[in-house]
Amino acid sequence: MRAMMEQTLRSAGHEVISAANGRDGVALYRDCAADLVITDLCMPIQEGLETIIELLKEFPEVNVIAMSGMTSAAVMLSMAKTLGATVVLRKPFSPSNY
Image (tube, rainbow, N blue to C red; front, side):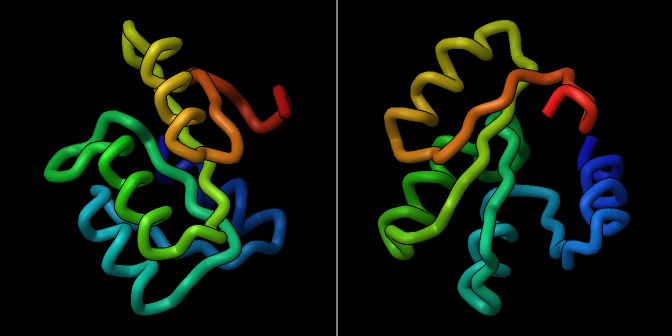
């Protein structure tokens, strides 16, 4: 999913910086703030809800898209929205859906 999203966003002319987990993603954001952060809610090392909390605590202006395909996706996405995610997406999805 991450590779597909990277390719789609690059094809549309966007610069993409990618991380395999929330901890690395937050570190990358600290080094080079982006216009948008897209995070999965289920990741190794540091999951998405914790990542959203950490990012918004340090950078309240950051826009976050949270996504999940877990069985409990509706609950998790609702929590992400409550924590401050700008947009939430349920996986699977394709670029043509949006």
